Image (tube, rainbow, N blue to C red; front, side, top):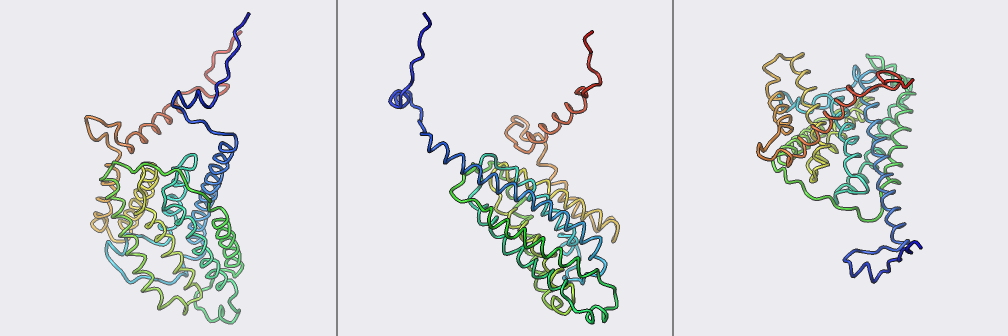
Length: 326
């Protein structure tokens, strides 16, 4: 006769040192995780929107947009054009949305996530101003402006993103991630964030003078300052391994883009500072310390991606390379 399975009781579990959760607690935890995962999905969708806005700004608005900064030299180009700031911010937000599985967020992320709502409301107002310009104002411009419908579409899109970010802000407390032990990475990213915030403030101060005297003034001011400021603020606040891993690629790609821009416009010597910063960020992925490279989360992440890429190249494709059984 088969032995019957004895059902464990909460008292037995307590004696064994394990924690027992009721069905209600399990459902509550599941809903909490779903709220944070939904917020990550909206943040990822927002990152695609910022990337699309960068492409649209380059194709439609960049040739006629006013200049909002008077800074020159490496500091003035550290943020690159507004296109680089938009693309870098989108890349950072997309990576950040994948950095906290199962509702693992640092405490700062809820406030940072909610702050995007008023930011997009300001963007909607700026693009709506351009879209609702009178015909006679457009006729007075020496340079032909893009159609007003583009401004209306962008205003609606930014308004939808602002509402979505507000509604998707998760309630409840997240599972706090453990702070990273890679001190050099945190210091390097904090420096990136401080420089970005300084550049955003400088652009805001110099751009306020022309923001309302040009049809694209408010829109250019928002595109040049707000994404860079939010990206820089998030970079300064990154504290866990996942958040640092999410921030470094965006900074590295940004420095490489700015370096190429400087080489094209001013020559090789003007891009040496950006090259140095790119090398410092790339050095985070080296197998350091030599005696324990597995303690470096950047190197572990790089090795994981290289292994996945190698398996993708060497693995058989369905229908090809398989030995068919006769």
